[in-house]
Image (cartoon, rainbow over all chains, first blue to last red; front, side, top):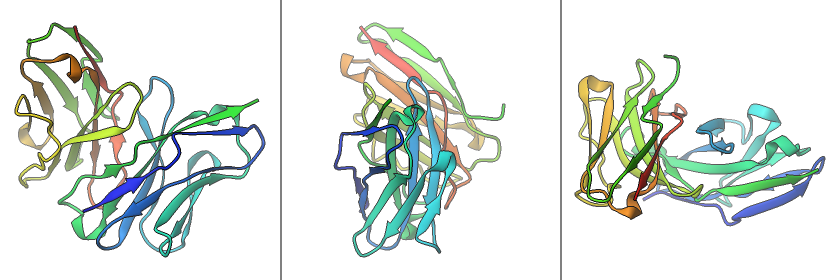
Length: 116
Length: 113
């Protein structure tokens, strides 16, 4: 079985400050991990993914995420938040062993609010 | 087109009616997903098609829901005898499969009165 948890329904941060959106996962084997963003009244957009290799992954719009196998986490980070980053963020996981046989499992989402 | 296309973008129906939602994936993408999102909440997995393999239907909430994918391309999600709790945004996504990221459509917003 595979699952992903986003423990915070909402994260508030001031513009210019660093932001972190938390994600933990559970898989039987090794994970493929993804972050997606959803702006108001829009479809989901891909931000970044971890497949293998360097634990620090860089993605779109200045976002990055760090894969931590011992803590089974894949937190999303950005050094300096922008008001335009305000959106709904989803973490997703797929077990490497289940590729081609299982759907991508999404977390419940975290709403990021960046105050000016 | 270049992206995933879904139709209709909005559908209002009466309780008890059947509805069909259509998804045109990106050409060449072998995997296609349907998810449901209620009121800006999380994504609920519905069904997953991968190539010629049997679809993973484990997320369909009841036997009123069904989906097909014809010729490995276009997919139709059918909801029979709609209920008010079926009101949601239905999202379709496609991917090359494996490690590839999903490309989502804009969704079909279903409102059941």
